[in-house]
Image (cartoon, rainbow, N blue to C red; front, side, top):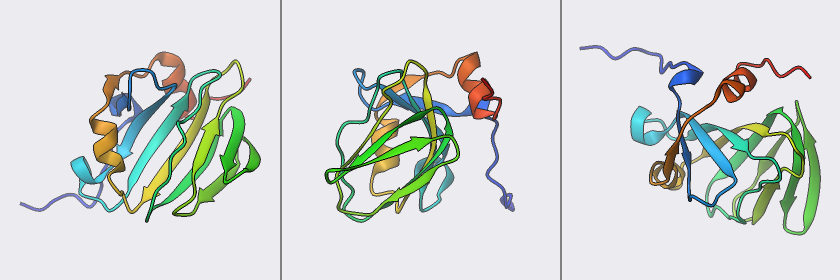
Length: 145
């Protein structure tokens, strides 16, 4: 049996999790090493209004963020970087960082971590969530004001 060269799914089929119940960001899994046997984790990260990630550091992994909708602030080692739709940034390994959404609307980022460094396992061990109609609309790129 030959495997397809594609790993394809629709946004409505993304498994979505909060790592911990009190977290203010959700992760909609696009592809990861657990399900898809790839060497990276790719998600749509959805930040609740006034939400942020807990401070975190990756010893070996690079983490890329691309803002799909909304705006916020990225913090890393005492520096801050205002982010908005269309902006991208990469956090190098070994640097503590936080992404914050200080706004009344959601912040949506495409987030890719390589290598995985246990990220997918952490996500899948979390609390399963769903995507609502607004999330699906924003992920599909219909993020006009």
